[in-house]
Length: 190
Image (cartoon, rainbow, N blue to C red):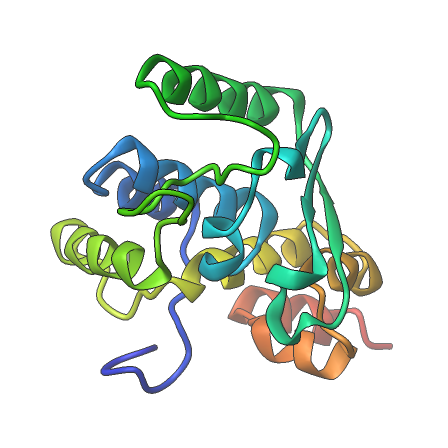
């Protein structure tokens, strides 16, 4: 569990993720959290997305916004999630914001800027307290997404492609093993 920036962020189940997202103060914050939940991306990656990075069936994270600027990632998304992003685009247009391809999905305080990770973290901190999910951090979206894929028996190599981890050892530190999984592994031994 993470406390005072130490330890690992808490892994949340579906209901806890729903509660946390519902506890965020605005549609913008909720959608950033949903992007992180659906793509297992980092907060800094989500906040820097531009409209040109949203395509039917895929979210594209260019090399400039990925951690370490090592390689770009294309994350498949469902049609319903793509529609959520299109609805957000329409909402932004109705509010008079530009949604040109080079514009950010999540506008910041100043023109041609994106919402900062720090601003999202501040909103998230309040939501964590409101939802009583102590031990949770912004990285919980990423860890929860990667763990749910692993628990659904998605091969590690496929999860690694989505997460952007350079090696499986680093990815495996994100994943947890519960008692039921240990029992199943032990019972499979002959």
